Image 1 (cartoon, helix red, strand yellow):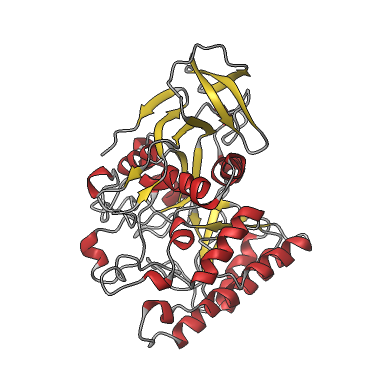
Image 2 (cartoon, helix red, strand yellow):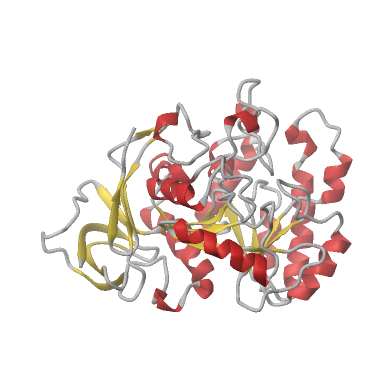
Amino acid sequence: MLRVEGRIANHDREFDGAVEVDTATGLITHVGPAQGRSDLDTSGCLIFPGFGDVHIHAREDVSGTQLHKEDFRSASNAALHGGVVQVADMPNNPVAPVDEASYAAKAVLTRSSSVHVTLYAGIGPGTQPLARPVPYKAFMGPSVGDLFFASQAQLEEAIARYRGCNVSFHCEDPVLLEQHKGAATHEARRPAIAEVAATEFALKLIETYGLVGKLCHYSTGEGLAQIRAARARGVRVTCEATPHHLYFDDAMLTDGNRLALQMNPPLRAPSDRLALIEALRDGTIDYIATDHAPHTLEEKQTGVSGVPHLDTYGAFAGWLMVEQGFTPQQISRVCAWNPGQFVREFLPANSGEGFGLIAPGYIGSLTILDLSKPYNVTRESIRSRCAWSPFEGHTLPGSVRATVIRGTVFPEVSA
């Protein structure tokens, strides 16, 4: 039995108390008042339900061709460092999980992970739904990998086969991307209008085919009104935002950092960044999802898009609280409760009530966040195999003291 006492932050309330986890089952058995007998020192900390990242790229598949970037074991090491207890891995691998056999083969590889892994299946021009319940990902326009569509008509033909399924969309219109491919910068080649147009079409597909929809790594302020309007008429859609779109903007780009801070969709204007922060605060955006993309620095210099973030997830949550005024309950909602709800139907039978809440019957995985100890992000501190971070040289006003996985404690090893 593990007993942890301190200041507990659920999405619906914050209180002083104690949580007990049965290390045999991995489930929470009791939540009650503190009695001065904690197995962990949580002084100066907040105890959260374990954080969940619903959008990562661990890069491991049966081809083994991208293990120099990351595998499930190294991704889980980075996740533990960042206070993340469960992740959902995207399907744009060299051998994409798009049918029963390829999905099952990739699932075997997740056994090396110390944190729980949910796998997305890919949707492509010729794919069909799997027999088991899984989340799906549709890349509306070209990104890293080959699993994408060339037109809206081609995408809709595929989506029609996935009626009622849980589908996440990378919102960039392929026709508009083609029209802007000759622009001078990456940001201009993938303009905000491409995301806004794709948002409109994704919402139409979600509504028409009764999908449980999610919009990935949202980056534009202009499209937020469409999301709010869709929800008001009953469309089942949620939305992600990444640490990089909330922390950086295109006014911060220089000749020295432009390639390192290249991703799809790209950084937007300062006004977009501020609009995203407020949308996260008011509930329009539901998840902090990193889009963790562990390309090496050498690959980044060739123009590959994507940045790694798992190592800094918890510290970034601290930045939102200290620098942007988010409450612990708000952080628990977007980092724990909502991610837990997203993966709940895909969990194995022994998962109790799932992730995201400190309450009896839920999985006993916790994030212990120390707001009194800043994290000076250095390359040496990164656990991801790619061994770098866009936050290098930045100091985030908080750090993960410990990550608990089903009652087992993984202490932070600081730089």
